[in-house]
Amino acid sequence: MKNLLFTLMLLTWASFSLQAQTDYKQWETHRFFAKRGHEADFEKGLAEHNKKFHNAAPYKTNIFEINTGPNSGAYELAMGPMTFTQMEGRPAGKEHDTDWAKVMEHVESTGESVYWRADKDIYYAPAGAESFSALRWRYTTIRPDQRDRFEGLMAQVEKVFETKKLGAGFMAYWKYGASQGPHVCTELSMPGMKYLDREDTWIKDFEEVHGEGSYDRYIEDLNMCVDRTKTYDEFVKFRADLSSDY
Image 1 (cartoon, rainbow, N blue to C red):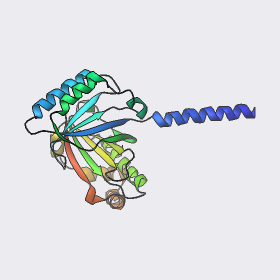
Image 2 (image 1 turned 30 degrees about the vertical axis):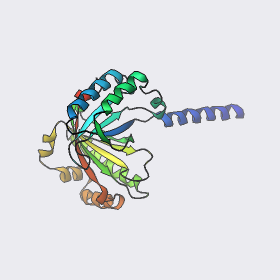
Image 3 (image 1 turned 45 degrees about the vertical axis):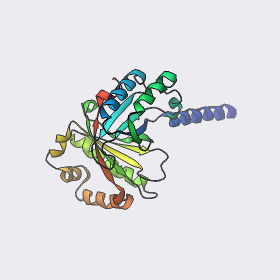
C-alpha cells in the first residue's frame, strides 16, 4: 500500500509539474526599423510572408506599428502564443527562409528580441476587445524583490477595469528571464485613441472599488516598488493587414 501511495504521489507531482511548465501563454517578439523609402515594400513582403507561412497556430503572427516612445517608427512582430517546446516546430526550411530574407532586405536595423509571458491573474478584456486596434504599452522596471508588491497593485488596477466596465482591456506581460529592466509591460487596449479623451474618473472609480484613501496608498506603494525614471509608454496600432489571417 505504501508503495502504491508513493507511486500515485509521484504521478500526481509529475502531472502537476508538466502542467506548470506548459500552462502559460508566451509570445516571441522582434522589432524592425524599415529602411527610409522602403516602408511600403517592407509592409508588402511582411504581409505576404505572414499570410503564407504563419497562418497556423501556434505560429500566427501579429504586427504592431509603434507610434510614440523611444522606438517610434518601428514594427513589432509577436509570434504565438506558444511554449518553448512548440518553438522547435516553428516555420522553417528553404522556401520560408528565402522568403524571409527578401523581407529583411528592406530592414535598416533590428531591436531587442524578447519572450513576453502573460500574467494569468492580471487580465481583463471587455466584450468586443478582440477588435480593438489601439494600444498603450507601459514598460516598467521593478525594484529588487518587489515583484509580488507590483503584481498586487496591478491586480487592483485590473479590478477597477473589471468592476467599473470601463470599456478598455487591461493585462500584464512579464519579460521572461529578464535580469535588467524593463521587466513588465502592462497593456491598455482600446477601441480607438478617442478613448483617452473621455472624462477622467479614474481616482473616483479606484476609491469606489478599493475604499477611501486607497488611491494614495496605491501611489505610495507603486513608488516603493518601481523605478519611475525608467518607466515609459508606447502608443501602438495593431496592423491586421500585415498580420496572419484570423
